[in-house]
Image (tube, helix red, strand yellow):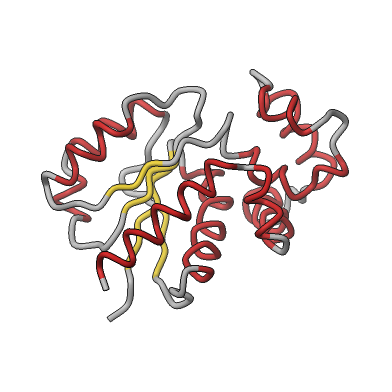
Length: 187
């Protein structure tokens, strides 16, 4: 039987183009290359509060049969993720939370550090990463005619150096370790 994963972003409109390939690659690295990974689009979430409300709401009825739910919010808004994980485990849902620092778009940018105009540590700490760094980068390097404005191609370029991504995004190392432990417990 296939391993079935529901990735929960704050907003799937653009983050899904980054998160689905990332989670697929992480699972492949952990021995699950044929995992069925999909991004939650129904309901279409719009922000952190909406995502948490949906997770606590009826998602367990609709998607509780899936093996794993990674919830990947932007770190600048995320809080009490351990509590959320505990609440869902009590409903027999395997939720793993990973707050992107500072936002999901940083993970895409990690593979293109040589093209950024500021040091990586400043990028990771930037309070307006999406607006001031990511959007200009996407405008220059993306493609308005492709899925997600080029996000899918750009994250695949980042993932071509997967270990390099983990080297500069420690929260992804933590997620990978937690996924490894989860998979070991379920086998």
